Length: 187
Image (cartoon, rainbow, N blue to C red):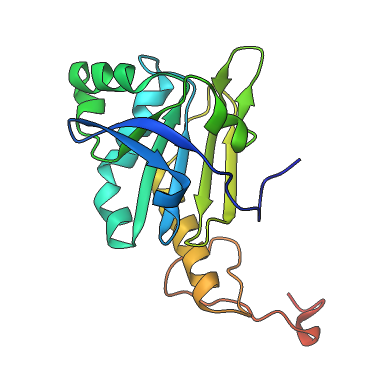
């Protein structure tokens, strides 16, 4: 069952951010745009390339009012150790949530139960806590922060402009559509 267009479930988790351990909850997420960026495990192969790519674009996300939360079923202690030992992960400034019980991962219906690991899933959440977009890829397929930025911009545009939708390949500043009876069969 898809969690698209549903409200995120209550959670409380330990995380690592900017050299400190912090607590994060669903209350911290509401009121702003958020991206939950799930990945299978620390100290792996594809994961650091993705997390580093998001870190390289973190300032752009911040300018858009978006907070990034990376999540794996590792602990916040493991996140700190990885952050301290990897040049790529060391540049991360966003929150790295530990989910060793899998509660948060299951809340997003993103757990590979047999392995106890998160799928490679991305969830865009609006300020009301509603999931607006989901992307899940297979283990060996890395995600692209540039594509994620485009999706967040589209979600923000649609939220700010009721009655308009963003077509395929939409980019900020490009034409949108206003669905109507007159458009049926004309596109």
